[in-house]
Image (tube, rainbow, N blue to C red; front, side):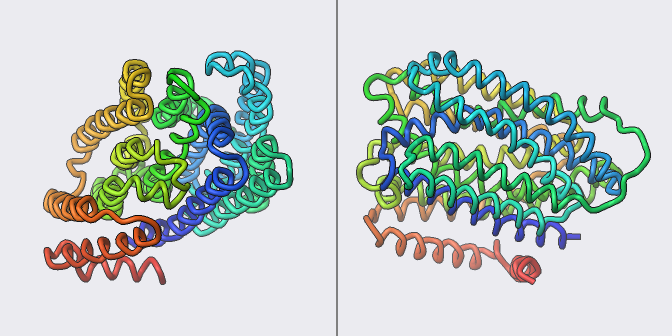
Length: 477
């Protein structure tokens, strides 16, 4: 029963790890050597502004396609063809809205100089969401290895093209253009990976796709805005050099976004599995997938968040240089906020996968409303820390509500004893990291030592055992 989730998670986790490293290198090289804090802040704001909508189009259509394919694998080519027709229409509408509305978006962010960059970035609407249709087909077919390769290719293309064009003298324009070119290359690769199969002579139910995708689209937009609205608030509401402040916040959030990036590999596996088991009414398997996904995610997220939060100043200096130290306190808060948000993503994936996108949408809307209100209230006075606190409170509310809803549906989350043991040991290594702060490369050595202590403690408490080793070895095999 566990083979699919183990192997699928392993494949996608490797690709996700590569994706995170590649993304980190993009921001590291741009921030340290090419652009500097102010231009990095502009890059982060522009990419976030476009990708919040562009990526959610991609995510929502990918999940909708994945669900339909997971239920009827033999209809994959029909579903792909029909989804592409709908996606291309939506893409052109969004491209036009962003391209011709660039001046308005720039005005709302209190910086009219952003308009040319927004127009260039709007080209992403014409390529990346189409690429997501192909990724959804692979996910629905449970071809996780192929999906992982496609994801890794996309990340590698972004690294080479963004850094290459920016370093070649094209600066900020080159960095944004590299993002667009990488998405186009991945679109071509996805097309060739999904072209095999038979064309079935039957009608496609566009109404079912639309009814599922519409609330999912709103959920995806709001869920992504939930962890990006803080950056927009820093840019629009802060007092002082907002480009530099945005750069500090981009650095902090880039590190903290390790958690949702890591969890994305789990959600990509959990979604088609939950979709298929709930479609046939197999609650036993659904509960199994929920318990294991939540436990293994928490095993990794809890200690990492504890260590990062306790050593935020040393971490941001090591990764981005001491120039970005003004973002250290925000990073400490954001590591906790985005670790909670990552668990929220798993639970809402279960909700959506069980054909209930509307409740997931409602939970995300409530959390976003809280985040928006708190950003307006806190950023003008607390600046970076106010934005991070707003995200923390909103993510906490979303996690609690989604956990209660999943428990009501399926009667499980993760074993309570596991939650208690992992939390207690993670708190212990947080205190150790806070009591013995180090700088530079010694920080890496401290991280390794603390994680070893964490693992040994869980072994002694019998939280980790032979079964976990078998799962790990099965995944590697």
